[in-house]
Image (cartoon, rainbow, N blue to C red):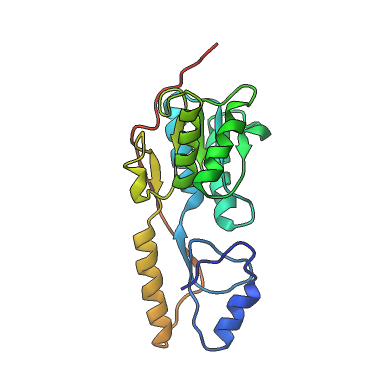
Length: 218
């Protein structure tokens, strides 16, 4: 069971299969690798988070963290775009702040976020670590996350529920992804035919205290 890193070539996965090592991918897909893939529906998940912010009245929403170098990054950004466009909301290029998937990256992104002209009132973050770092940076600047700036995460890590404030985030079906991937791998090891297709798990939104109605300031 493999979770491909950024830049993993399809040839590596094909080689494993050709050498008698059945492969199953989780979390992200690799173009050209004809093996089963089990992952959360990332575009659907970020659309859930973005639509939640829109429902609260936010119109200027940034996307913070992530990269286009993986299927996960591309799909999560596309879900954000889909929700914004469906609501008829503008998406400015400056409102996308890409970067590593770490707390430090989120913390550093806070400075760029807060310096934006027509500053967004909310941020949809690539994952929980970026979101927690961003909230820390917002707090360091003297603002209150969840009040002055709404923030959403992704993954529903254990620390999301105990962050300050508790983080609104997307549960991405990790346990179910693992269960289905393990079942498919066992079937392959037992010589059973397993369809080489992508199976998406539907995420769920867990609303906590890091999101609220927008506060417009002069």
